[in-house]
Image (cartoon, rainbow, N blue to C red; front, side):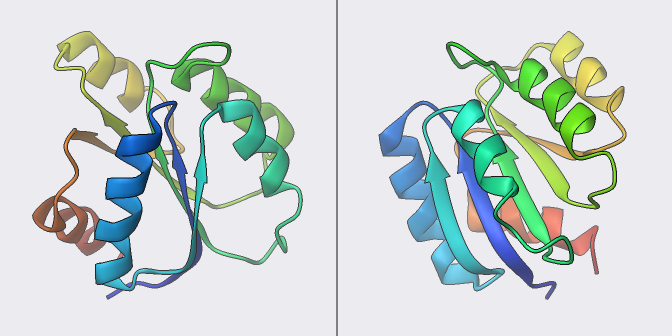
Length: 128
């Protein structure tokens, strides 16, 4: 299984983050798992990472202040040379959201909440 130096959970719901953190901890796909209630905080933390660190980001799209789409735009502007993996993790079942996500080269997947071990394994198979 692929291993990332860090996994970021970016969701304004602390309960979702807690549950997902525990679930991801069982998979051992990340060296450290960090939770962020805002996209802005997550963007700031990326600057503290080593440029060679591999990062997997699970990103909610429906958040106040800085939504997932705005996060993606800022990420591409600030970190054009990073090769991180970003997976949309959303309660949205809107086909237009999936299409929009496909328009971002940096988005490697779109998963519907809730996150499960099977969904994580499915996503990780793409990186193997």
